[in-house]
Image 1 (cartoon, rainbow, N blue to C red):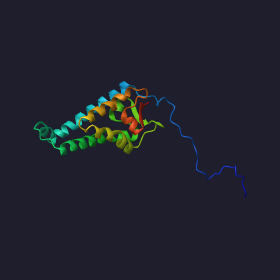
Image 2 (image 1 turned 180 degrees about the vertical axis):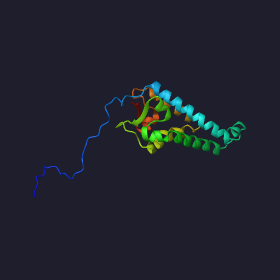
Image 3 (image 1 turned 180 degrees about the horizontal axis):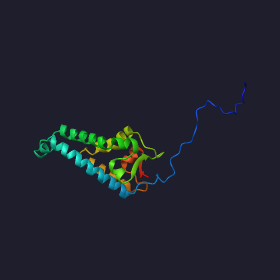
Image 4 (image 1 turned 120 degrees about the vertical axis):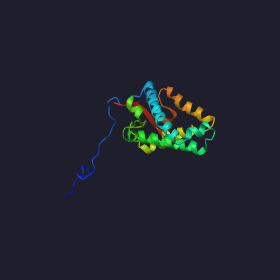
Length: 171
C-alpha cells in the first residue's frame, strides 16, 4: 500500500512541547529569603563541622599553633562531605538545601528553570567559591564580591553566574 508523504506515521516517536509550569514558580527569590536560607545553612554547617573538628583534635592543634595544611584541607573536605550528606538528596531532587527548603526557594537553571544535575551544582556552583575562599588575602575579598553582586536586578550571586543558575520562589 502506498501512502501519501503527508500522512502521519503511527510508529513515530510521540512529540510534545515541554514548557515550565506557569504557576508563578519562576519568580525570583527575595533578598530576605536568600539571606535567611544562607543563614540557616550556615548554622547547620557550624553545628555539624565544629563537633567533628573538635573530636578530631583540629581545634586543639589550631589553638596551639600546630595546624597543618592537612588539617586545613581535611577540614574543608570534611565540611564539604557533611554539606553533601545533609543537602545532597535535596539538591539532586528538589534544587534545595535545608535552608532553601525552609524559606521556600530553589536553585534552577537560568535558561529553562529546571533543576540542574547534582554534579553540575557541585562542580560549578559550590566548588569554585569554596576553593577561592582559601586563597590568602584575596579569597575573602572575592567571596565578598561574589555575594554582594546579588543587589543587581537579576538577584544572582557570582556563583549563580558561574553555574548558570538562579534562585526562585518554590511553590
